[in-house]
Image (tube, rainbow, N blue to C red):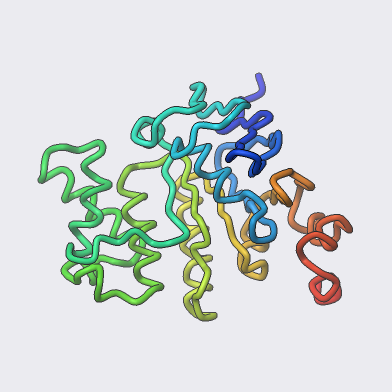
Length: 245
């Protein structure tokens, strides 16, 4: 018997007044995949994330996650089911330590302090942040703040982790570390959807790419095929990218 997708999105539509941010977007995400969600600025990628995770209730369409109809479900419910996201603008609690930030995620499933601390420590070890546990969030570099976002999300014990521009603003070394972390999370059995503009980083680690433009899905497939798709090249990648690839 064929296994159902971990995430199934059908005809997802989101309107803000006369603005059509997502227009009948449909796709599936299989368990264990890394899926790149790409497209130009204003394509509707972050809006799509917000509809999937419950920050927006879509105007129409259906979202099913791990066998549940999660359409319009509140974020704290989707998170408890195992769908967790990070944000394009990092949401670090600056006056709290790294450990305290991560505990926020751990408390979702572990209200007992000792158990939550153990879970937070495990998450920090997994992302290489344990040595920064006592540092305040406001003292971290942008790369470490982004990593802290992932660590806090990891502490919720997600099945699906959605990362919004995790690699934006990072130098080449930091980008490579972020790529390695994504692959490490996949190795732990976590499915990832990643919104990203750094094509040289996201395409090599992805199993599938979905391309949005003006709110609509214009392509979906293997990254090696997507980078040669004439529609995608014209709408987003540009001829220079085509020449390099």
